[in-house]
Image (cartoon, rainbow over all chains, first blue to last red; front, side, top):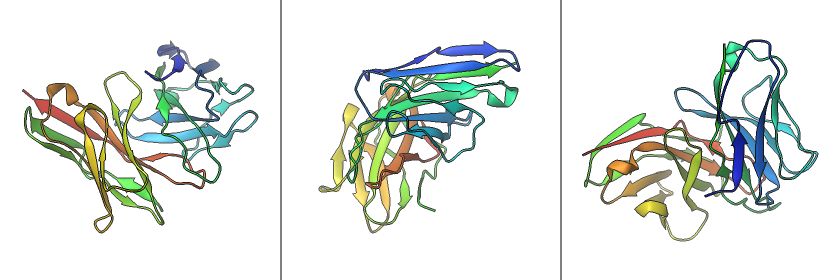
Amino acid sequence: EADIYQTPRYLVIGTGKKITLECSQTMGHDKMYWYQQDPGMELHLIHYSYGVNSTEKGDLSSESTVSRIRTEHFPLTLESARPSHTSQYLCASSEYFPGGMDTEAFFGQGTRLTVV
Amino acid sequence: AQSVAQPEDQVNVAEGNPLTVKCTYSVSGNPYLFWYVQYPNRGLQFLLKYITGDNLVKGSYGFEAEFNKSQTSFHLKKPSALVSDSALYFCAWGDNAGNMLTFGGGTRLMVKP
């Protein structure tokens, strides 16, 4: 089992609410990622980080924001949730070797978000 | 654009038969290729990876994958399927330039008793 945790596992929330999806890993990995997974299962990278104070946007534009104040913690925030944000959100981490290949990514169990 | 593709949305196999889940890549240079599996209501689990060396890579749960440079493929295989292998399978690629792991669209494997 990978040591990466996401909370909550399931969340139903009303439109306009602010939410934060938590992701923590205890492996000391520098790289962390957030993926959004369609109901049709395709994965889209929305945010990533190379380490503390590093955040980058991924391939898919997202209204969410992320922060990386501590190595182990990479929360994702939606300031004002909308039904279009309904999706599964997967957090992952990997070791980072500049100039070399990263280790394989380890994934959390995901947060299934429903905005009503 | 560099990518991996999984041409089949779903693969159906009878238990005990061999299975193949296909992946092709369009990546310049030397690709690093991965297979992940996702069980219902779970995150992705790493199965195996190809970095360099032997073209046949062995992974978890009896799976293996063959890197074929001439066909730009990295198909996932297992000699004898189990019902418990039913899940979503994702092919992915990465590189040594610090780029993020990029996933194919996924293939749903259904193994029937």
